[in-house]
Image (tube, rainbow, N blue to C red):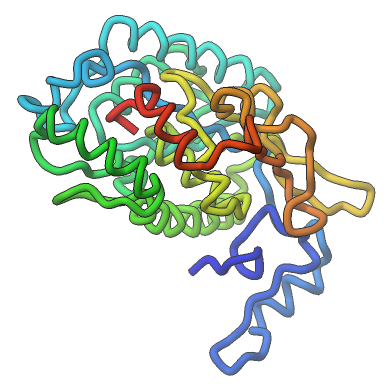
Amino acid sequence: RPRVNGRQLCLTSESHQTRTFSRTGHMSRAAVTAAARGASSRFRPKRIILVRHGESLGNLDEATYTRIPDWKIPLTERGVQESISAGLQISRLLEHPDANAFIYVSPYMRARATLDEVLKLVDPAKVVSVREEPRISEQQFGNLQSVARMREAKLRRNEFGRFYYRFDDGESALDVYSRVSSFIATVYRDIDTLERRGVLTPETNIVIISHGLSARTFLMRWFQLSVQMFEQLSNQPNGTLLVMERRENAKGEQWYELTQKSWQLLNLKGTIDSDRVLAHGTGFGSRKLVSSSDSDSLDERLRRRLDDIPIDG
């Protein structure tokens, strides 16, 4: 399973620092062989693209959750248009002759419908595979939610802390983080398998179509963000892309960085400093998150943002 701080299964760490240990504490034979191949031996896709589904009926009307199971809620007309916009952007990112895409999608109807619009605009020859992945599903809030109870729960969540608060009969963000971490390990295995089969190219893109919280916990795990940093992130708007670009230095060491536009989509009322910092040493692309007002407590800022946080993560 992935370990903290990039020791195992963490593409953002420096390649020459990646180690895999056996139960006895010694490096495995496979790890020794991989290390002997050099720092740049592991294949890394050109980009990892996190897409939030288009606007759903639940985004438009919270009462939808009282009569339709969350996973069956469809897109609105606006959501369809947002999905088309996402498809156009992805198509432009795949313009290189060698570019292709391996796509993961949440089983939720709104994510699958977003995928349908994207696939209409992407050259089918550039799609390596499409895989439905339950671990990137929406946060579970409980079955057929009461609007009044959910609004009360949102208030309690923001007083308690968005990462650790667990909804009645549902999940906390920590629960989503745990399953997304497991999913990241699968992405690594899939990349290794497809690379051995000669399917991938230096221009390959990993596209993940899911939900706001799934994307935020993915970034939290990938970039080793703290819980406090997570509390300052907002959902990207519906139908938008968070793009992680592969970077490389003169030594051949590779890592990923979010584009500036992507960080702006995550910025909540100016709390993210745009000055780039290296988190956890060379090889980690991140950005420093700072308070919009040092005199405000985190809880006070969260209470002010309550109305800006939708039920749908």
